[in-house]
Image 1: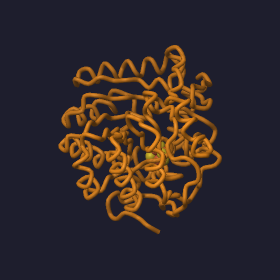
Image 2: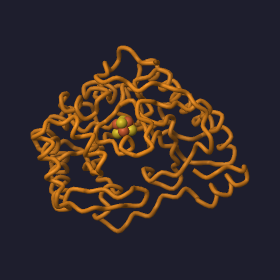
Image 3: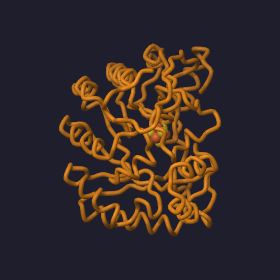
Image 4: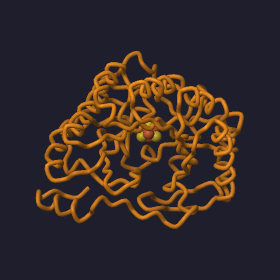
Length: 326
Ligand code: SF4
């Protein structure tokens, strides 16, 4: 097994790393992208972090105790970028670009370099512990990258339960500081907010203090949503009383779907509005702005249009290569 030592001290056995050749296209549309000219790319199938709330992990075709690293990603990117010109590529809609495996982190660095060589930016979202050597390798591309660090809580015990093999909160704070020092654009995602667990002023204020000290001024926020498999994942890690309180809070919540995201049960709308308002008020005192995820709050506004990156262009290009659409 290929593991990274001793950066994160994973608390649960890591999935076995296996390598496989990808079949089909590598770049694809993703509802996580905020604009039509941002495409998505998954370097792996599966993720080593094993977060309890993870909807990808809860999907029926999740590879379980394996993390599949695609070996031909760079070749495919080169091929596809000969006919496509996205502004940036989002890494990774269905996994994390920096899980605790050196081989995967190196593969991510290679992809960022290849994208940059084609004039394409990399938008990276992670809960991981990025190796210093990888950060140094990426330093010359600081202006080609945008990082989102997912950090829903400063509480190390809650993080160890909910984001089992992700980097501890203190390590993610260090990463934020290092990226800012490198001149990389950084925002922080309070994702997921969980009622009474991490959305109270007592939980939020220390986190906002720590982020403000590191110069963070832009946050995104999104409440947890539930599907049956996510409930089962959470039942395993949360103490009984906390689990019951969280699930009870969702009893009267609506089942919603939005473009690109399958149906799930959400907190009642008024409870989410109250929670986001509390967060925004606290954040503004720290000089921060908060953007609420439209994807996971489809009942807050008119349905967000699907972010289709020039569909006719993408489809025509793939057809010309005889590729099956993702
Ligand atoms: S880091 Fe992201 S993809 Fe990986 S398990 Fe956690 S939520 Fe899922």
